Length: 166
Image (cartoon, rainbow, N blue to C red; front, side):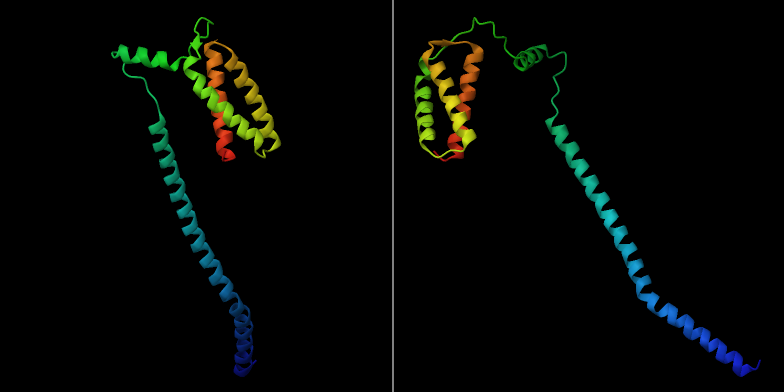
């Protein structure tokens, strides 16, 4: 084997090796660029997640409610009394004389709602509210739960009126 033959064989290796490596270079570059982008994206997501967690903790701290110190019994008693629901023993009666104007207004709104084109569910809700308001309007005095239910009826009628722009 002569020197010329060895040079020819080595040139063949170089061409075949170069023929294999040449098309792989762009794929390798794309792979490395993808790894770099994945690293940046992961860092960005981690930073974003931490930022959201800090915001949620801040909101939770703002919403947290703590009672005052035990030494401040006056405020503690008032807050505990306000946080407890009032018992409905049937003895508390509310006079509807001051509510007649509001009941009349709600009844006018219900009449306008009945006259307007409503969805089926809203029409059923309007009919139920009209019956409830009429039932409570006929009474002279209401218990605590009845007064709360009447107030809920008022709110529902106002929501429906706002929904349909009545």
